[in-house]
Amino acid sequence: NDGDEQAAYELIADDFIDYEAPEGAPRGPEAYAATARWMRTVWENANWEVVDAFAKGDKAVLRLIFTGRQVADFMGVPATGIEVRVQHLHVFRVVDGKVSEHWAVRDDLELFRQLGAWTKPLQGAPKPVPAA
Image 1 (cartoon, rainbow, N blue to C red):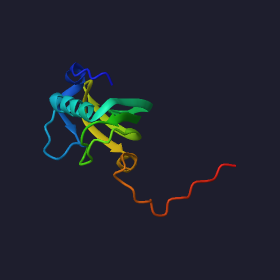
Image 2 (image 1 turned 135 degrees about the horizontal axis):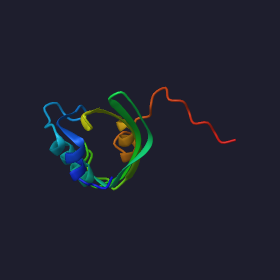
Image 3 (image 1 turned 30 degrees about the vertical axis):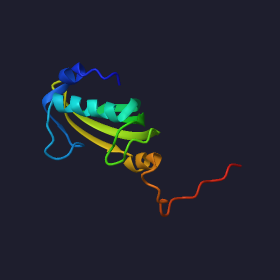
């Protein structure tokens, strides 16, 4: 959360693969640092709050709440100035004390809904329960 790029070089393996990145994207700590740098240009006050964390074997899982205010284009959505709050799940494989692989599941539908880029109602979604 503090933007410390040196941490990427200390904690990310040279052959790090980010399966969330587009196919053919660069690998290693610089690629990870570049992604973090880019996110900070898109999202003012970008923050990832750890809600749950656990590990088994060589894998660690984090459930996060991402918050930030969109100040630049994100995946084709022009800057809106809107603050978002969405869930993420991140899985990291750790080898010899360094992160070697990363997978993520983000609630992008909710993100785009909050940005106003997705306005279709969710078909079959339950109707809100009125307050008692």
